[in-house]
Figure 1: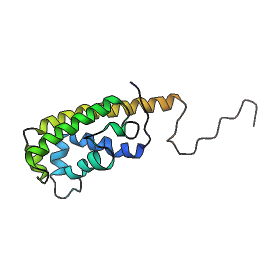
Figure 2 (figure 1 turned 90 degrees about the vertical axis):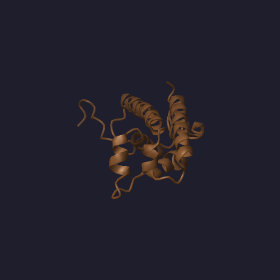
Figure 3 (figure 1 turned 30 degrees about the vertical axis):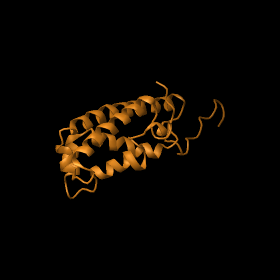
Figure 4 (figure 1 turned 90 degrees about the horizontal axis):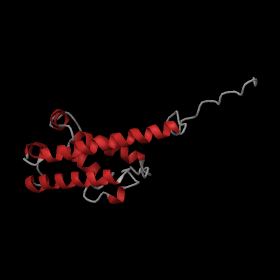
Length: 152
């Protein structure tokens, strides 16, 4: 795996949860279909297609909010699966209509595979930071270095 790193980690903080939401039918039913909740499919679509990535053309996001070519390819698959459903139900359809579409399970499956890879790649990147000596969140003040033996 070649990890291109990411120039826009704050973008990825939106992309990963959006993909996880698409991978979770329970979340979709419990949150998106609850009128008291503010998150819905529209928000998720804006994250993945407009604001922090472009699932229809994810290659330019490699090194920005996507780490690997595998992520790019899986994001493109998700974009294709979503596009099939959107074409079937119409762009202005309600969330309920998307979730009831016969093509929706393909969206969930594509999102689940992508979510697995996104999270696994983030864990690898985090492990590499840890191995490189980063023990605190980036940007946080580091702890005082240990005093050398005999120095006090």
